[in-house]
Image 1 (tube, helix red, strand yellow):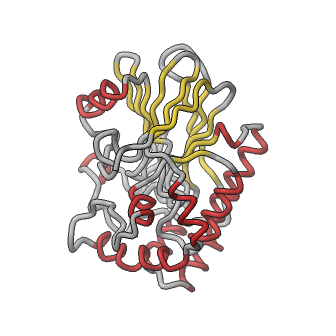
Image 2 (image 1 turned 90 degrees about the horizontal axis):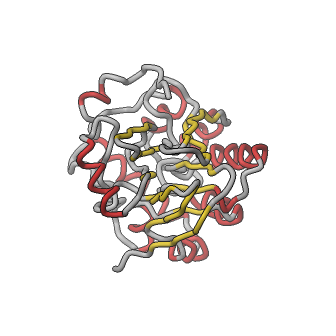
Length: 275
């Protein structure tokens, strides 16, 4: 299937970036409140994909996102749901704990989505391009080359630079790995705003997003933490056919396992993230 790329032109004012809603309706509602209080219009709110995921309210989350009129690209989960596939396409190692858990939450999510929600997924582009302060930005999920590629702060810059060169961008905004970070070199920048559906393995239940503002190179990025009713999210997950370990992570802020993480990021488990 050809990639659908949407160029949304020049954005002015603040731009709210976030990823991985993961069917976490309570976090999404809290973020919408932030956008409204900051005066950020929906068209300046951009998700890096995986609106659907580990939590208990996939249908309610999609419908809330749709009614908000914010923008998103498809994550690997949206692609798999859209194409009626039987797994999440997250690129977890076969037989790993993540792979085993995905065999619980993905069929649950798939079973809950209405035709209207599935039709909505068909409208979401693979990538978004925009400019802010004369700087070109491309939004991808994993990477430009692979929707399920895990790219972290410790990932070598030459891998990131290939994405920047291929997209002719000053900045890449990406998701998928679940951890917020910023990396830059020679006025080029890679931004992962984090995800709002799950904590960032830092031992805290609140989650991450970012706000962009026009500035001289590189773009000004302000990372923020989002408080929301994680106790309700946890309770709803425990009532569904979902992994109890993920429900525990919602409260503890600690990942059940670190199978996808490079050694540098593994050493940061439970430690405060400074951005």
